[in-house]
Image (tube, rainbow, N blue to C red; front, top):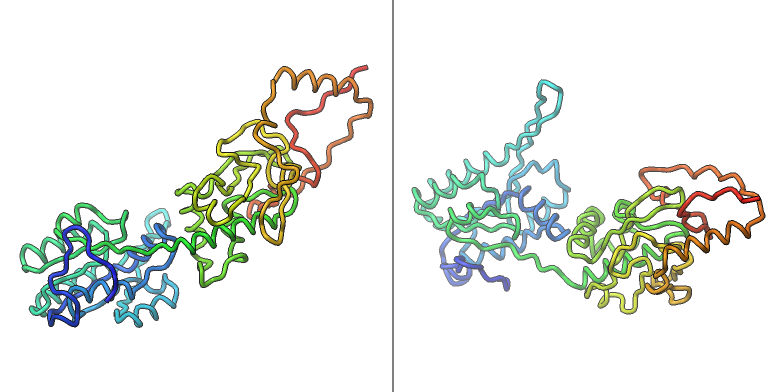
Length: 373
């Protein structure tokens, strides 16, 4: 019934469902588990894994999940049905304060507590309660079950989202281990490389645009579109993606989101991938560096960067005095009049058009000076 094993203090006493007639009750704080799983792993929770975990302790006499299911995709209720969990729908209560701000109060938690206590009182044959939550608000419920009603309580929460005090009150924990597939992450990395590769000259990748656009490069069976934003944030936390400050063609500062070529997962997913705009350390004085400029050429079919015209980190080592002398010489030799600057392109805050550098246009470091007579 699954390969998962309990963690510290969570060895099942009843064994598998086939070897015991003991019964268990499983109660799921669905919103807590779902949002914690999405935030931590970038994917939907798997109720079948909950079922398999519960069956390690005995037959499921009660299996219920509590939430305002109007706030969740319809497909989640079908997955609960397949796993044998009853969806307990309790719409949230909406009120407004004196200033007109809307307040949303969950009614699912209250009904969760009432049903757990009612089950403990009316089903003496149920000795073990599995509470799928990490919310410390249930500490009093746990202490009542354990200390006054003599029930065994096991906390099954998402690692990193479980209150230590809740676990201490229960005395037993069996965390939900989401099997993070390395193959899925590799496919996402390749999709990001393809996304970067198809950007037109002058465009640079940003977190918001990447999150909105990446679905075009991913099979939904690999990662649903509604989880892409969470996956991008996860990659940033893990260092698979990195951010760097740069300047666009209109002289505005912006932060790019780029693949970290030094990360082991990136090296394994796309061997030989080169990103000339990031060499592991941020640079403040980049010159003609970044996506769509002379230092970058993309193969739109593979999303990989070619080696032609790539500049090394040594190309950026220069002396400031030498640069100023070269600039002065260029000003003296220049005889053509200074043309009026073209008006900037319109900036759409919802897109990355504000990141545009006109094709062949270098990033300006200082305003041009008048020619000397």
